[in-house]
Length: 382
Image (tube, helix red, strand yellow):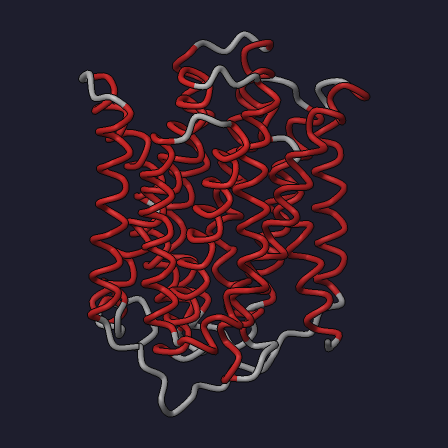
């Protein structure tokens, strides 16, 4: 493993650790600071809104420069400030700024993905995607795990102080980091620049975005909302067990980062993607049939592995089909379009729930979405 990969891997770990070490305590702190439900909603939505707004423009701009280091630093500084501001100023406004800065950092993350890909040979882009997914999720999981302990041991400022410290270390590491040269390849498949029409012509961008939208829709609706709801209402799960469900999902996603590239190399991208969606369909529907909390954790682990594999395969496919020189532009649009699935999953499924739909109806619809995505993936040529 070369020095460049070690540094960018460490920065990636710190990047997501820093943002997730305070996320679990933000709603409770906002309430303590006197924020109403509307303000808490704005704080919660600031991350996603900034990501969607900035992801495309930042990614496209990054393809215009020969050295992406300034954008890598921009992301790390955003992470640093997202922890520093609430650590100094404890208020609902500072929490809103923290989440908005986190969203900006998430938008810059596209450039990190491409930079990590440049640390691997062209033939190992899937391995690069898996490495990125595993390292970032390890940081997010550790941050989430330590969040409550930080607050219990040091009060409301502690998680943000830890976040700022981790962000500061990431900035220092980037100052000594040497980026790869960015010579435009002859077979670069996407036109870079500020012309969105050219970016939208990139091979497989639209179908890949639809598939990732489906993956995000199903995984977010199950893991973050309706599987915990089912566990609590139907199985009588305790609060710690709900945390175990989320942990099983994340751990399986991390495992996908190491296993999926090997599976894809053996079976091919199309078959691996098809299998991932079928896994999500079968085990997503199985949630309704399960009456044991430990078996429910197994379903979440399988869905987490499937969702992680879908992202790894599709991101690698984008990079392979566009070339590393202009991949940031296309990935920016890809993540902007597909990120809407994270919003649509819980929102639209919540409308069904409010309208009287039961768990059987909800999980059946989610399974059918996965099946449809599997059918689409089977018809693609990678």
